[in-house]
Image 1 (cartoon, rainbow, N blue to C red):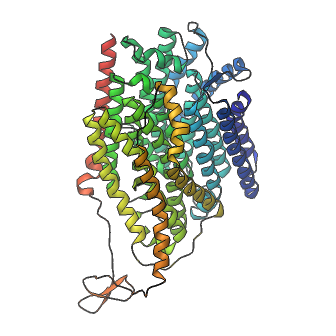
Image 2: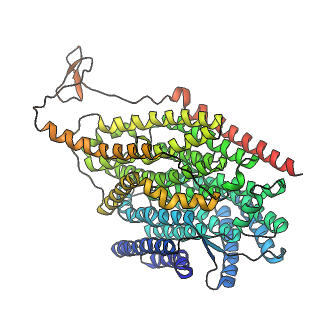
Image 3: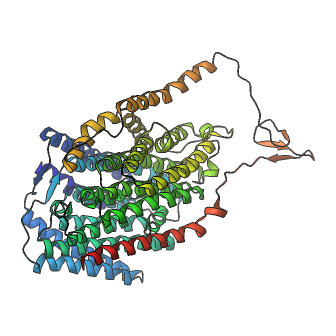
Length: 639
């Protein structure tokens, strides 16, 4: 296990260096190398998960040459700080560098001059780690494969941007290594280093095009993530000085069930860091701004994988948040974020922005589940992470392919997509179904979350979930109807083969997960709950589970039967009524003066009621107030 884990963490960094060394003109070689490296990482992640499964229990260990790695990671912290300082001064945003300087100084001081800590293992592999391994190694790597074809089309349609795809691919591989390191690390010093690497990767990819908007948005993401990193540094200092440990597990165990309120301080700081990384209110704007980046970075960093680092940490410490003010802060922020961003998603027509708001809202629901800190809510949170990663990754990729093909990612321009680009539309519809239609995974997870909130008598979270889910249904239904509506002739699809491979595999994975979720629950999630909480109970009954599986089958069987049945009966074209004589193509009508006019049907976005100018700023203010008040209560209770 030690060698496999070391390869998972270190190998992607080496691969990034190799890709960066390939001359930019050798695009075919770059693509082939990317495919090979992606396949290696995927196989390695799956094989490592299998080898751990054969052991069947949580394992703690150190990597080979741990002392040398400690020094490398400490040097890496300093290098990251210097890089951030350089970039901040280069773009005249030097104030942001202060956050990096302060947190790096704190970590370096603790490492070099702090008191001795209790010896502990640097790596922990359990079911939660394995779930993240599979998300990174399968979903994340598929996005890398998708990126090969996407970036080819991207630069054909965006000639004003310098083609730096080797740099883009190299940063993606650095991100793979950082994420594997982050979810493997039980040593909080190591976790802090990999945490900052993911933040810098996000910054570099958001600013890929080097436009003013991209640079401004990349620095917004950087300072918000650095603010979370500062919280992580405070947790490190406090844990070393007061608890004499750098083990996340030890910090969690000490705080869980303890009446000593001072032990909640590092838990609160870890939770604060996780809230920033997961783009919860009031930190949501960094993820919205990240949508200026090419679609693979949106799918990889800002939907499927990087933002999961925050909720991963929240689930890791959820036992210590149950029944205290830290948990209240987390579930209030998560529940409110889910509700507010679900409403905001109704008001926008940019496809990527809808997906961004949807991502933030679902992360909010996962955050709320982790904050409650019970076995039922943790069960729901794990499934939300898995289903959301697959569904949203597929949706981001599909929207990117649609934009490359049609020149637009506006939902209004996707009318008749089912007849114009049937393959893209099919993938899009499966992804949307996966987000909100029974019995697909996200709805199953929300059902479990609702039951858990009801069982915990948390009325506020029940209200947030019910009304937020209603808003979710509204905007997904609008989008789905737009794709299916209208009559358009099939057009040329420029989507690359590699893009379709990734999207089709995602679609198959989503269906398999929906059909086999009872198996996933029994094999993966239940053992994880037992390791965290000591026991486990069925969140969804076997009867309801059987009904859901039958519904999944019906969703795919009914269309096949319907298609066969239509061949047995004579069909008749029914034209739409357009307040005038239909021109015969169902897209134009004859007005009262005998002139042919195009029909225009648009969705209602409620922006006059719920638009960003009216709702976003108040939501940010409410998020700030919740965090400030709850942290004041936590710190005040100690001192």
